Image 1: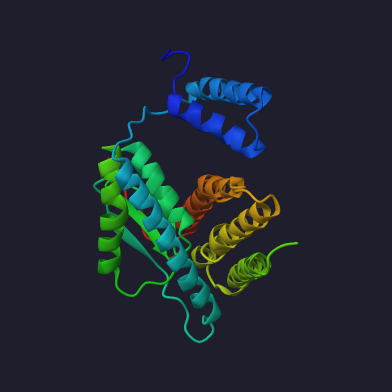
Image 2: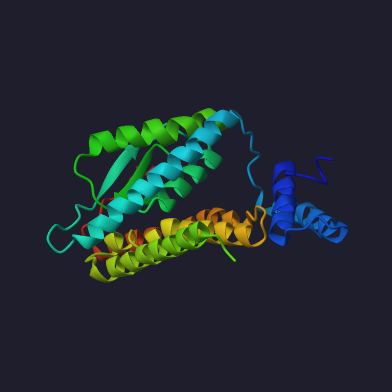
Length: 162
Length: 112
């Protein structure tokens, strides 16, 4: 079973994705989707993905909405920053954030969050994963930002993945 | 025939989405430096894309008088794939700027 389905959640997600994309649960689509869910993880196995353990679904949902909210706020801030950049150039800079999260999957999700948020760009992660270099579009004081980053993103990810 | 509120909200969402895409493009032109320029285009791939997806969900749900939710897959797949290019660009730019001796932070890893 483990050999046939190395990543059962991924298989299930791909199967559902196929059915939703086709908006149909006809036998043919059920079969094609199942084939996709069966073959894709086997083809990806040579990449040796790290085994993943996901806990605390409540935290995941809260993080999801938190990120959605922050992305919308960041959109408005960056849009405003662009519109007024003639009279008030954005205070863009790099900041270093000390990290406690070490799990590779958690860090991958963290990099997704920072890349999706318009106001931040993930620039570099130290080899020992202890420091993150982040480019921020417009930032006045870095201490509150680092605190928000660690409290709202890093801590939930540590609860989910570690 | 569509109900009026559907037409109005779909139109508003589409206009909002194009406004954000436009601001993103203006930002790309007006920003002075590479890393600053990486931020505004993200407006198009986040709120811009979300508004179009929401508009398509509302429109087709009203057209078929049932929930047609697969438009949400676009924002989800975008948020999985966009970071790949963003990270690649940021890492490359940082590497090249360091090689050129520009004003960017030094490597955060301590050498062994």
